[in-house]
Image (cartoon, rainbow, N blue to C red; front, side):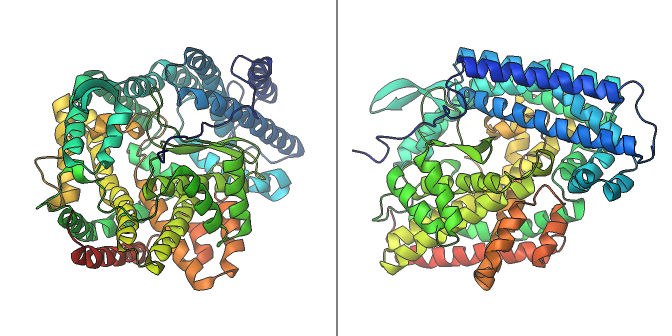
Length: 612
């Protein structure tokens, strides 16, 4: 039996029996009712909209009561909505051909627009209040101080209530619809691919997994088939990207942001000096990652890597990472940090929270989503290699973070992407270091190379490739202010970004011009620059892990408290708990130095190993 013979699908029945069950129908109707009731309450209390409170309204007893009731109702409504949304998404992302799931998703989007309008009304209303006085006088306001202060600032970046309401409705047939088109087109895209001497229509998600094959001819054929597939759907995807970025440019300007990046930084709870310090440090270390790429080329017996060699296996260690073995190893190694983390992982595996099986109609990639109470679900396309186990550990880290946030209200759990990666990187590092230690103990050089390569491969993607994605998005936003971009122009921007970042580490004649079409992160009108937060998360997580190695057990309680507080303050303030200054390039370089050490160790091991 192969390592991928039996892979689980997640169990959603603890949430609702099925999409067509009476229980789900009742819950769907309930959240619609909650949204209606929230709107009626806002109208009665003059929260936003017509008759809204005047700027600087005093924090009298009636105002305190209104705010406390608004916070309570908004928290409850958003929490119920997110459970319904997560449940439907569980079916849409695992089978985009599921007509019922798509229909319910479309229905929910209409109500989502109304909830978005109400949330915006709340934000605008908070902008008129004396927030500091309310925080001083109300326990509920004090508990939500960061959310209220953020709303106060956000209110200065809102259009008029009528414009915001219209935008929320039009977005359903605008940016959200274009994003949905991208998801449907890419998940259902089949391309002709020669397999075992026979040309077959193969799902793009399967074709992309062939990038991990040992046979270079297979990788090359898959790469060529992939590029041909993206070219075939490039026109509608370019239309989607142009429409989304055009919309974001217009709305950001209307809301008073200088650029979409400024809005993204605010949402990420960081500032421009922090971003500049991090990206500046990353650029300094590009030559280190090019050394890694050259060392990998050496192990493969190649003068230089091409794009389709990026994920090629360089060694197959004696350890087989089947799904079951990955399960056991993760639970065991999480226990070296705390029993609580280990117990969480064991529960996730035991209760089938993970959908690990790649299959037609299932979207590519991996993610973790909160569904209810302290429960999450992990979406993966498991590959029987160390990288597959590492991905599971990463996503379970997100789930652990969700569990620690379970005691917070919805507004208190509003964690930015920058801090959302903290636990995932930390958990991934626990497993990586443990696997490396086992291989070193057993004098298993091949496994050491495999593990180091998987880690460096991921780090290279997050430091080098993420920078290329950032540059691409920045370029698209700038040029989209003037006009739409053609497919050729998008390809040129993508290739230029890859040449700036990968440099001579990759063959410039064999890059990936269609990465703009493949990456779903570009196709969200509500979340721009879905790239630099990953780099922040990686380097911040590594920095925290280094502190753990220095401090030992005294670190763990503070770490859990940090994760439970990621929606309660900005990133710089939370980092100061550990004496970290994220605006100082020295912190980012210290984390990157850990990667330099890995590159040096990798170079030493592969120089002594025979070439593939």
